[in-house]
Length: 145
Image 1 (cartoon, helix red, strand yellow):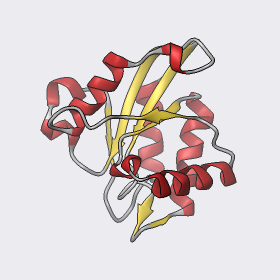
Image 2 (cartoon, helix red, strand yellow; image 1 turned 90 degrees about the vertical axis):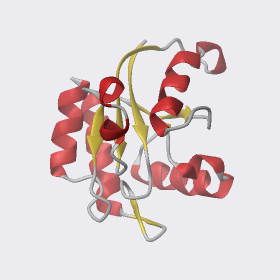
Image 3 (cartoon, rainbow, N blue to C red; image 1 turned 30 degrees about the vertical axis):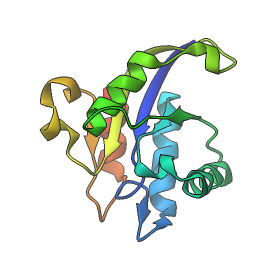
Image 4 (cartoon, rainbow, N blue to C red; image 1 turned 45 degrees about the vertical axis):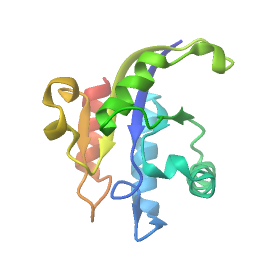
């Protein structure tokens, strides 16, 4: 199955002051509804089971059932972690064949500045106090189309 991936940060994207923002969550769902993308957590939340459970519970409440996994901590930067995940992704770990056709990262950290070559046409930046906005939605959909 051809699949699009969103590498998703949480703080500054969906969450402010440790609380998941409902509007940002709804905006993420709009992106997913249009693109049918799957989510891979690239946030530090991935390291903490209680945090992952909080995210998964918020996703479930709004009807998001698209979490595919999370990145490892291999590499010096988040960009390295994303590329390791893409390189190491193994269809045997899930019940369906997945062929990744397009991917983006949504983050409040400037991943493009960290690595412009690898993040060109793969990055949507949020502002830490705004998270996913209408502008973010448009940009993400454009990059995944």
